[in-house]
Image 1 (cartoon, rainbow, N blue to C red):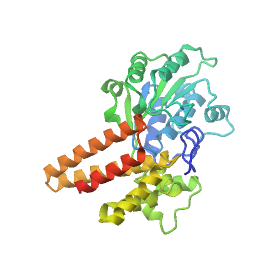
Image 2: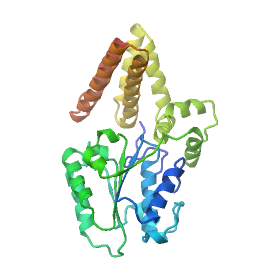
Image 3: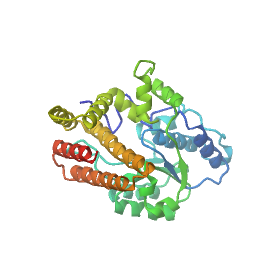
Image 4: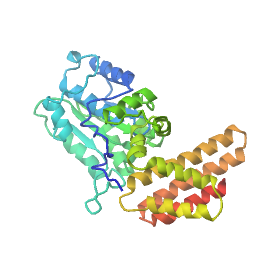
Length: 343
């Protein structure tokens, strides 16, 4: 099964190294103009689904601020980072003394990202702000993502947000803003990014070397739901095959379906299958929630409520399975059984 380095999908460019962003011109213009005005907020909550460019936008804006430390002298639009610039090179290599990227740390034993951003990681932000900047430049923290902060880490971040240091900027990324502490949301300026339309999706994938003109192009664009990372899972990780197998299982009956379920579970439980398992988990949860919405729209509130409870139960079981390293194959089979029974 395909693996990726430091959380970057195969075929993707790490956000800190990516010099292109597609489909978010309004968000870029807003950030550039609010910074130039000198009235920009010290913390921006960049919201939106996974894989649409939130982290790339954050690094792009950080490059802009560090390249133009005096707001009044900054241009009124963001431009592609200059690969020859020392600031661009430092950001791309993680060597900038003016930017801290907080994300889930790697577990040295497993080589996988840990389940949460801990308070120890947040303490790095305190030390970061405690150091004197040799250039007098801005200090920028990118929290990627705030969804991954555990309770203690979230409270520690909140304390810094309440009394931000001078010339500090927080770029807080979130896939699900409704799940964050209300006090964190209240101290940030929300900036909502939408899933990419088809043309920006084509441009983003072309930038990564994918020519979406083949017979599966429309199918991939439709299934990706405006997310470049979802498209990469479809293209490089067998996502199309997984989605097709899932549909066959849901619509099928009899012993043959049981065999398909075991085959799918074996693939998803294989070694180094984290990415495709996450893809399947999202696919499964998305299907249940869509069924609940369809039932509600049709006026079948009892069925809608039952499916909503099923969705909540699935999310909890997936979390518990991951936390306690339970047998993934058995978890998948149980979830598929429950979904088929509900249908």
